[in-house]
Structure formats: structure tokens, C-alpha cells
Image 1 (tube, rainbow over the protein chains, first blue to last red):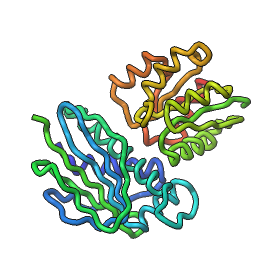
Image 2: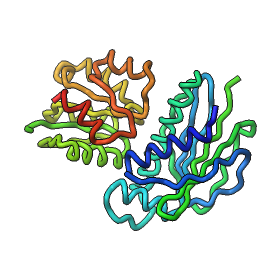
Image 3: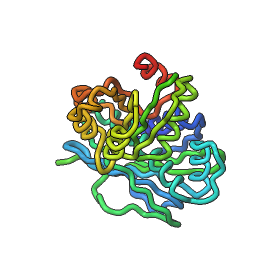
Image 4: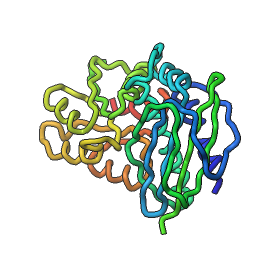
Length: 154
Length: 123
């Protein structure tokens, strides 16, 4: 089960289909992470009988504005509710693709509704026994991170 | 075209994108109504003439499945077709939606061509 590749495939599909943008994809990183350089993070809980976890999309301000502006076809000036909504929907669609990936491996998950927060630096805590896979992507020269933490339900 | 559509999604961004996809697909509606959840959708259907509903599944307050269930119990709106547009693709939840009257489903992310392919024959 190649979770890193699933994150790559799921994220690239969202961006090529909905934003007509080709991303530069970095190398998946496994293991615990420290602080993430991000100004806006959207998180989505994954629950269910087989897998429990969390998907997060961490974006610097410039990427978040770029994504939202491309989505809405307009210039975006600040990290407002439109930006939170757009990044939340990106996280939602990536999580949907990961749900299909896990289903193909006989693991069912349910998706929660995204929560998006604005700040300066983020560290995700909890789920100490969880697997963590994070993939950096670059859009128009700026990098954002898609992070998945998950663990089998025992 | 002379038809009205209702878009139900808790994401304003997604409602804008679906509306744009309808236009890009050449599906021009007279009116595009919007609702952020199932409760708001029921209110719109009480007041407006709607020919078809495009609805998300995962939404706060009243989700798409509960919306379908409630809508099917109301005589005045039970026959209005609903097409699901959602990240949910599982046979169980889509099957439940169809058992409650949904006429089909489109997976997010989607292209205008996909919207046209699924929605076009329903109009």
C-alpha cells in the first residue's frame, strides 16, 4: 500500500481537473514532522471501522491566495473566508480520493467536514502511534504540503 | 433553456465552480439558486420553482442523505430530481442516495464535460 503515491495521485487529480494547474511534486516524507511553514491549514478527520486519521493541507499565504484566485477567477487580497473555504474544499477532494484508495485496499473510512485555521506556524500533535506521510507540492514557484496521519483501528 | 437549478453545497467556492461548469458545459439555466445545506435547500424548494437539484452529501446541519429523505416525504417537492455531486463514491452511500430518489452522482473533482455527460440527459 503506497500511501505517498496515493497522496500524489489524489492531489494532482484535484489540481489538474479543478484548477487546470500542473503541480511539481516533491518526494514523500515519512515519519514524525516538526513545525510546518504555513499560514493556512485545512484539516479533515478520517474515521471508521478500519482506519482513523487526519489529512491536512498546509499552505503559505501566497499559495493559498493563488489557489483561491485560480478557483474563483479573481485577484485575492487577503486570507479571508473565501480562501478558507477554497483550501477546505481542496482538502475535502484530496481526502475523497484517499478514501477511494483505502477502499481499494479493503479499508473503509468516513470523512469529516474540513476545519480551516489561519496562523503563522503549525505543528500537528496527537496520534503518537500513527503513520505519517507528507508530500510537498509546488504551484507557480511556491510550495505547500499535504500531510496524512493514519493508524489501523485495533 | 427556461429551467432553474438549485446548487446545494456548504462550500461557496464549490457552488461557484459548479455554476461555472454548468455554463462551460453549455447548460444555461434561467436561474441558479444556492443553498449551503439541506435545510436551506428545503426552504428554497418551498419558495421557488426548481427543475433539478445538484447536491453535495457531506454538509453540516442537514446532509445530502437527510435532505433526500426529508424531500421525498414532502408531496410538493418529492418528484424534483436530485443529482449528487460529492467526494463520496462508495456504493453504500450512493446506493442509499439512489434509494431515496437521487437520479445519479458525479464525483468531485469533476470537469464541465463530466457535468454535461451526466446532467445533460436529465434535462
